[in-house]
Amino acid sequence: MSLALAVGVHATCNPFCEDKTQGWDKKCDWGGCYSCTECSAPAPVCKPFCEDKTQAWDDKCTWTGCTGCTECIVPEPVCKPFCEDKTQAWDDKCTWGGCSGCTECSVPAPEKTQNWGDKCSWGGCNGCSECGMCKPFCEDKTQDWGNKCTWGGCNGCSECFVPPPPPAN
Image (cartoon, rainbow, N blue to C red; front, side):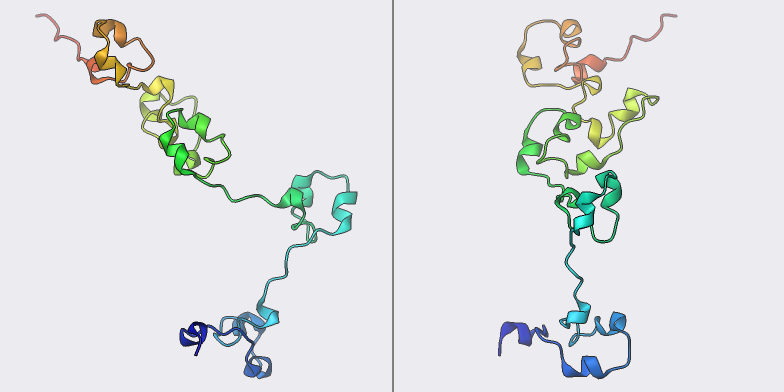
């Protein structure tokens, strides 16, 4: 016995499927019937009229008969491993072909009216220059922290967030 049959996978349409009176929408859910030709979705096609019409492809791709045209086929977004490894800001990386499917890219764009303190907590803003960073070289440089905290790669270091002195009485 094949592994497919042992786990209940049927590669053929059982004769009883045709004989039963239920609709194919129900029969296609049955184990012995889902391989019937009535249950398979037709392959998307690109009819000749799709090319001939002058409407925009955004419109034509919604038409029956045009969904299989190459202009209508949208590749699945992917998140390749290098996306996480690269140090550029996510708003840049999300424009790269291999990174558009990363979860950081599905965060809505920040509203311009919100303050950066809020925006910096969003995944899509990690690495934005306004959110500050603390790169390893910040600790190694000999300049004082007042100077280093003005640098783009150091403005997120904890030394840059020293609370102000208490008011004098």
